[in-house]
Image (cartoon, rainbow, N blue to C red; front, side, top):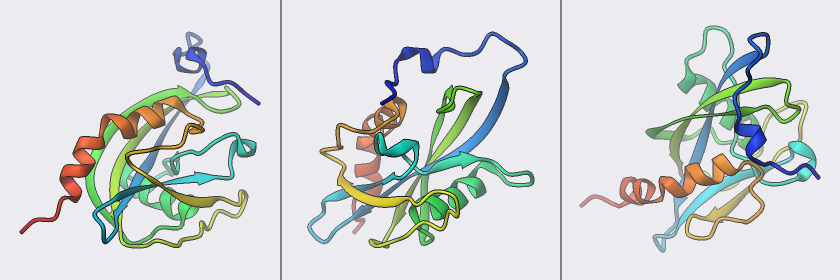
Length: 161
């Protein structure tokens, strides 16, 4: 099992290292009781932990378009409402072959059951309470992204009268 430590977040000093811009999504929903749930996926990285759906930006795509596509491919959600842009995170790719610069967006959905469409990796989507995220989120910056935005998520999902 690979341990994700601080070395994954040290930028490359070699100008030959490829940089890849990517996009992803934090997908949330609120149930009838008012509880807020976050969608995380398993399937990549040999099942070492949950991840947020994300990936590279294809030629001609905006970051938002790429985030929607990646969420659909990896988590299966297509009925997405954009709530906010959450910012950019940088780190090495899992095989440490390129530097990833990923912009994340916050989406809400009413979909509960969904299946990703990725042809290479069989992802499975799991809902977790926003208040109690699982300990086995693979990438620390993704767990931090969610926890840093908990109050924003609660505010944006609060019903308006």
